[in-house]
Image (tube, rainbow, N blue to C red; front, top):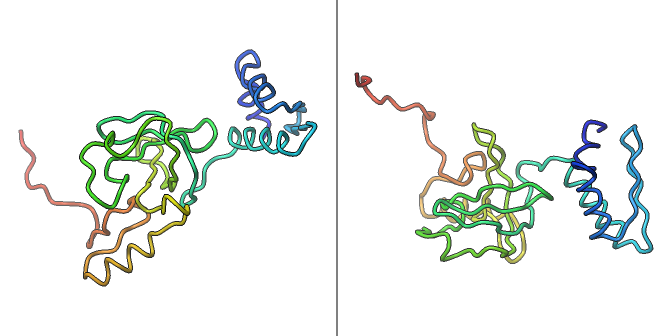
Length: 179
């Protein structure tokens, strides 16, 4: 899309220069949004193409991505998972077992596999590690749900990031408001 051209170029050409410098590819962007990439070998072309794709495309909910932990905080970890995009793996989404302190499980720079759950109501990116096999990168939601069903426990829901599905909707009667 032509409105993404400036995202590839960056302020003062900073981003496109970084792509060229780190991949070794030559890049030409036409006014109609066509991007031409040239390099001496296919690896350099693919690296530049993937980098540019990550800038102009959006992650798909339900897809699994490999990312790097960029910051560990008390409530979870921020993971760079889609080019320049970061998302939060909430402490409840790190592991099937309870995690008291994310720093006990994750370190900055660690490579992890995450499932993109979508955006929360404030536009923040939600990620989950606990529904992804960290070795194979396979979505294990169905496997977890089968095991939970055998134990008579509620199934995990994709749209809630793995929390059990709640029966009867989400509105709770909290009683009279306080004044």
